[in-house]
Amino acid sequence: MSDCLFCKIVARELPCYKVWEDENHFAFLDINPIREGHTLVVPKQHASYLFGLDDASYQSILSASKTVSQRLKEVFQVPRIGVVVEGFSVDHVHIHLIPITDVGQLDPKQAKPGNPLELTQIAEQIKNH
Image (cartoon, rainbow, N blue to C red; front, side, top):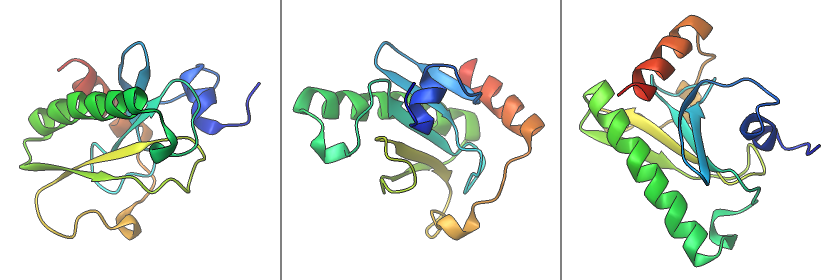
């Protein structure tokens, strides 16, 4: 068993608030969201660094992120979905998608633990959209 947190989530060994998946990617709510709907998109296959991916995998995760971002934009009725790729918090490629309405709303200092009931409701809303 891998020690990677996101590998465990993808393998359903740890719970998450899943919002979308396809054959190669998995998207779930961040449990410490910067803003409501803050979602992570990860490849199902473990990889440590976005720019270390082969070209096909790189294009594929960007395409998956675009698909999820369209759902987020519609569900949260925001003008933009902010994108953050920092790669240090968990050693598994992950793209943060954050519904935003104005400049300065991607500050990680704004993150706080999400309420489990609210996260469940938000995940269902995105999944069913």
